[in-house]
Image (cartoon, rainbow, N blue to C red; front, side, top):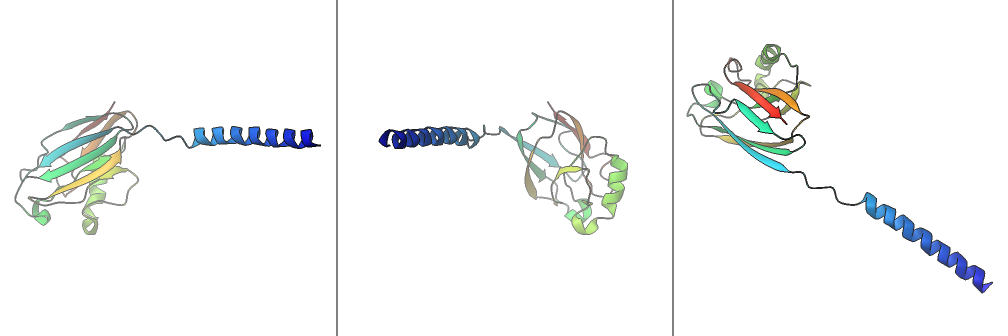
Length: 156
């Protein structure tokens, strides 16, 4: 009887140690996401200082938009809007015109990431995960700006 009881205890302990090993593997911390910091500025002449940004797929991107001009945001506001591949930029910009109350950011499934609208002397920071490899468009969606304030966001 004692041998049977000891055998049952041994089997139970063996099984629970296997479960703990599996649980440990499942709860293993994920590899840290690599991060990249990007700074881009815009001015009162309706220009971004960079028209090409490169990052690696899956990296955490911290983007800082700095408005180096002096004009107020209701006159010369700027934002950064990263669009999904295949987005019709002119159509998106047309929708942005209607989104005055939301800083010219329309409700859209075409947006990957965006900043709020800022005026001269202001800055804003956003953090997002870089999408799949490919080339994406970024624009300023303030009325009339997208035609000259745009660039390529390249994910390698």
